[in-house]
Image 1 (tube, one colour):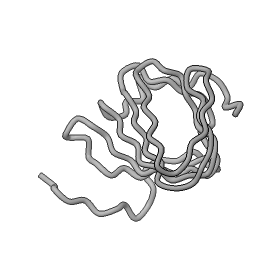
Image 2 (image 1 turned 45 degrees about the vertical axis):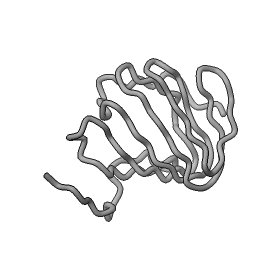
Image 3 (image 1 turned 60 degrees about the vertical axis):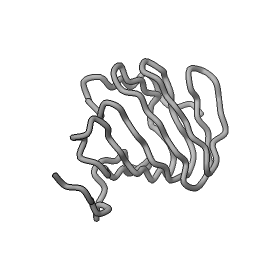
Image 4 (image 1 turned 180 degrees about the vertical axis):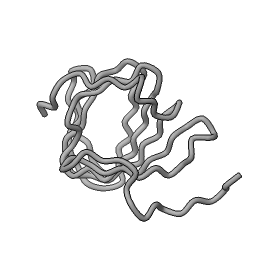
Length: 116
């Protein structure tokens, strides 16, 4: 088992012009841990049918829309997204994302364009 992982030298996933993501965990413990460098926000509102999301804002600021309600996001904020909750972010920030269980493209739904 790998107990210590180095920060990735290149991003593992991205949406051009919106954000870059770096996977920090291998998912073998039942969670996914990512570092996200968001330069614009999500391209679409999204919903997960099996995974919860927890985000911790490390730096920067922006907005979130969670189930139709807007929130201002700033350094030090924690955002909790339950299963089947529509959400999106807009802003310029760096954050840690925890997903439980790890991301599964078959349970991820893009619902509409980000209008924040």
